[in-house]
Amino acid sequence: MSILALRSDLIPFLEPFLPQNELSSSKPFVTLTYAQSVDSRISKGRGLRTTISHKETKAMTHYLRFHHDGIVVGAGTALADDPGLNCKWSPSDGEPTLQTSPRPIIIDPHRKWKFKGSQMENLFIQEKGKAPIIIVKQVPPANERESGVTYMSMQVDDKSGQFNWQELVHKLKSDFNLNSIMVEGGAIVINDLLNRPDVVDSLIVTIGATYLGKNGVEVSPLNGDFELKNVTWWRGTRDAIMCANL
Ligand SMILES: NC(=O)c1ccc[n+]([C@@H]2O[C@H](COP(=O)([O-])OP(=O)(O)OC[C@H]3O[C@@H](n4cnc5c(N)ncnc54)[C@H](O)[C@@H]3O)[C@@H](O)[C@H]2O)c1
Ligand SMILES: Nc1nc(=O)c(N)c(NC[C@H](O)[C@H](O)[C@H](O)COP(=O)(O)O)[nH]1
Image (cartoon, rainbow, N blue to C red; front, side, top):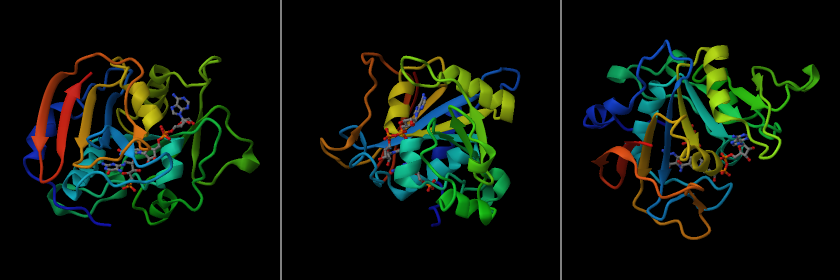
């Protein structure tokens, strides 16, 4: 699949929200980005891949991928969408290269997703995308490890069964030198991070001109009632994009 040319007015619009070069910080720059319907759904139903954004804002996603070292999705998204997570945008219409693609990172404590047979593996074989880091509770024994995959183990919180986001992003920077990380979903991840201004540096949301209904997967943080800061809007053919800080 090729992408549309990036609309030139998106470049100055996004610029203030792109990763800043704070190489001295131990925390990477984190961008949270997703596409939602007008009724705040990110898919028709859990496990269903659903196109929400127009092709011109899909091109923006690839532009954002170009500007990040790593790209995170939860296991639910990896299983439902079989995403490639590579970058198809490059400056001056040159061919995208392996170097310009971010490193895929899958949060999968119980190792439900498999690299083998995935679109990501296919792109990796063709040298169009990088091999993933899978974040697990425990690194599997040698005979269960998948070829090409790097495992990063982390402790989960006893009560919530969740990894700690601050620890997770710091470790991605210290262990893999990832200075900027883009988080693309899905709902469990997004809803958590909308309540984490200490982790998320930029929020970039595409709103597609569609309703997905009550059975759709909702984006709505557990703790609501807060106002976004530094809000700016861009309007495209069918979509709008909102950039803000939490
Ligand atoms: N429109 C969009 O922009 C967009 C983007 C991504 C996904 N989606 C959609 O979202 C749906 C998937 O969302 P979801 O909520 O089911 O799954 P998800 O991608 O949020 O993954 C959830 C899983 O990831 C792991 N996980 C997440 N955070 C964790 C943490 N802090 N610690 C430990 N483990 C953690 C757990 O295994 C959890 O069950 C799919 O239908 C997909 O199509 C839409
Ligand atoms: N920008 C955007 N618009 C959408 O309408 C939609 N459904 C997603 N969803 C994000 C999710 O992470 C998908 O899995 C990747 O968009 C898959 O895309 P790739 O195969 O990696 O190119 N993202």
